Length: 73
Image 1 (cartoon, rainbow, N blue to C red):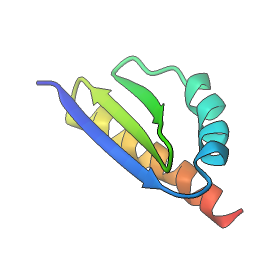
Image 2 (image 1 turned 90 degrees about the vertical axis):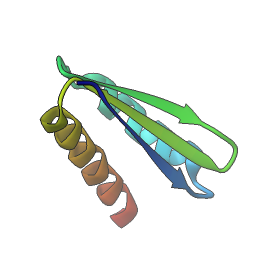
Image 3 (image 1 turned 45 degrees about the vertical axis):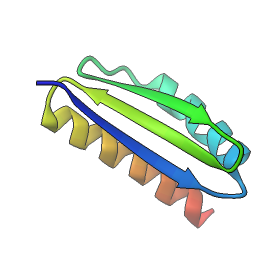
């Protein structure tokens, strides 16, 4: 089975969030999932493609942790 999840972040700080997440997500090597970032005018779409539900959950948790860190800075 193949799993997909899209997280949409709506914010006035889309450029800052994109710049903060981009390098962090590119550094990580993932064999079972892929992450795609799409920056729009007032939102950021983060798409996760995963080979299994465990990989999807792990990648989702990683992204939400990064967003939480950004939110508290």
